[in-house]
Image 1 (cartoon, rainbow, N blue to C red):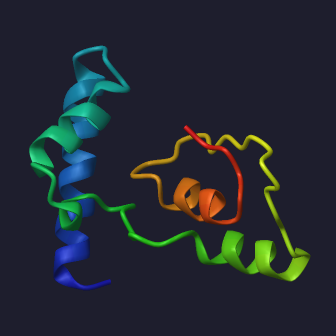
Image 2: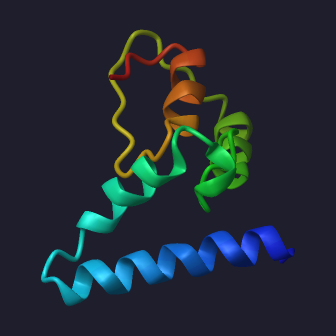
Length: 92
């Protein structure tokens, strides 16, 4: 883990602790996105590509959407959702 990765993870833990102390255990997500100002480098889970394990599984199974609907829970910035869309799934 490089220094930048360590720093953004440390900042994420700080924000989470602050919001948990306030009694708002989920508020840090919005705060982190707002604090990042659109800079994906500041979001620890923003890989800007699909999850490699999901992508490998989808390719190995020949996954195709064929117009079906898919939901990605906790989609972050939507990398997996975009991947599913490209495979022919309807995503929102």
